[in-house]
Amino acid sequence: MNTKRKKLYEGKAKILYEGPEPGTLIQYFKDDATAFNAQKKGTIQGKGVINNRISEYVFTRLNHIGVPNHFIRRLNMREQLVRQVEIIPIEVVVRNVAAGSISKRLGIPEGEPLPHTLIEYYYKDDALGDPMIAEEHIACFGWATNEEMQDISAMAIRVNDFMCGMFAAINIRLVDFKLEFGRIWDGDYSRVILADEISPDGCRLWD
Figure 1 (cartoon, rainbow, N blue to C red):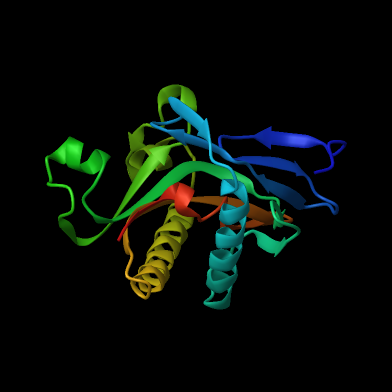
Figure 2: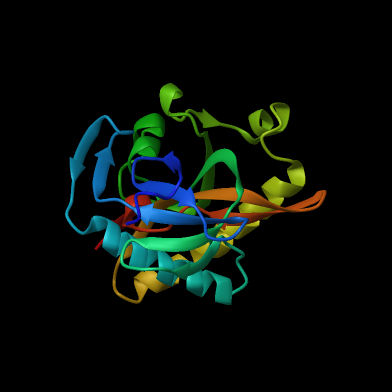
């Protein structure tokens, strides 16, 4: 890794560096592991390498089925070139089976299939613990427009359909997972695309 590059952001699992061309970033996958909203921390050797390859595979396949995303290409074992986006401060959680926080909040037994796929929204703010929000909060505070939320919801369902099939083929159950989205601009016009990563870090998988 070239330490002379300009670091723009460091999160729990990745570092973003300035890209080689305008409008691009280099996304570096770390071996750091966190749980309970970063209250527990550790290191898993090779995790970043595996997540980089899995995210590359999923984003490439999603692009082939018409889900626009920020992935351009993998650069090496730990890095990929991505399009720079304006991140929408919303974490989208897609649920197929009751587990984790939804079981605690609503008293639904863990492992119970949901009647239909459920999409939840959380405000991205570590200091606040990423609180759950409603679409009314998103509209009220201008985090995304109604049209953007329609696109986000449609893409989340499309991603879920693809990933459920992908994991079912290897006898793994996709319980829930998280997504992030961002805007790319062309003059005064913007559109929403899938961003961040899709890897085991953001998925609950059961065999």
